[in-house]
Amino acid sequence: MRVLLTGATGFVGSQVLEQLLDRGDAVRVLALPDTVESLGHRNRVEVVAGSLSDYDRLVEATRDVEVVYHLAAIHLSALRAIGDPKDLRMVNVEGTDALLRACAVSAVRRVVFTSSVAVYNAAPWPFMWPIHETHPLRTAGEDNLRSYALSKIEAENLIRRAHQEHGIETIVLRSAAVYGPGAPWVEQLARGLAANPWSALTRAGRFACNQWIHRRDLARAVVIGGSAPGLRHELCNVAGPELFSSRHLLLAMSQALRQGPWRHLPAPELERTARYAYRYDLTRAQTRLGFAPQVKLEAGLAEVLSAMTPLPEIASSVRDPQASPLAEVELF
Image (cartoon, rainbow, N blue to C red; front, side, top):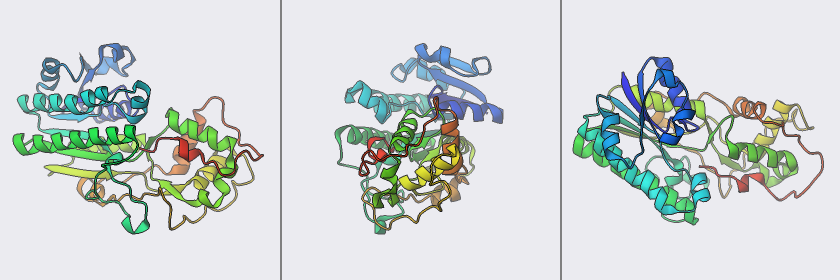
């Protein structure tokens, strides 16, 4: 099958590229000119150098393509660095619109789009869980987070319109936080937790925080989304297999690093209430795509830690027992 992949040099896109090639697809990649040199497997893919703002290059890139995997985007961490919401809209919304118009001209059969659970409104109480795809969408929040979420919501609306007006099969995957070796925010969290492990041993450390998904699992969901039969327009949550707390993270780190007195303790039960706890309903991904996450936190975090240089060392002294490293990282 001939496919087009955008965002192939990204954290998840590089994994999608690996899996598409392993499956035997003929892969064409749309890459920014200054990223072509960093593209993996250049000798095995067809490269179209261009951007989402160049409509003519998008038409060229989508020609004779059956499925488009659209992962290129400005993410929240990058938005904080560039500090300009105009760039966010230009890439995430206007770029998606231009790509979809090119897909319609080229008669692309299916588009798979990676969105984010950041689009959901807050769900602070357990009676709101699990968060289903029909959960109310975000309209408020910190400026960057709201801008990012709105860009994804607008892009989702464009995807749905492309299905309605042009008959393109569309698969939208709302992903939880993506982790794996080389993810800066996970390494930041791990070092913060190692420096202050006592923050995870307070009562607040038992609060659930999220269902991170390993990038290998998310890439597999994306690839499945391009080939699952009988689908017209699907919107699915994709997240990891476990809801966990910062205490779970500390135990997993201690076991992987064989450090600290906590690695032999049993994992705690999660608190029933937590202001920032989330559990996502994965039923639709399981029933419609046939996707279920496979990488559990303990194994995935061990991969992250083994790739870190130097390895974090879990401290034995108290710094600030009330400061949680989870409060400082991006979870979407």
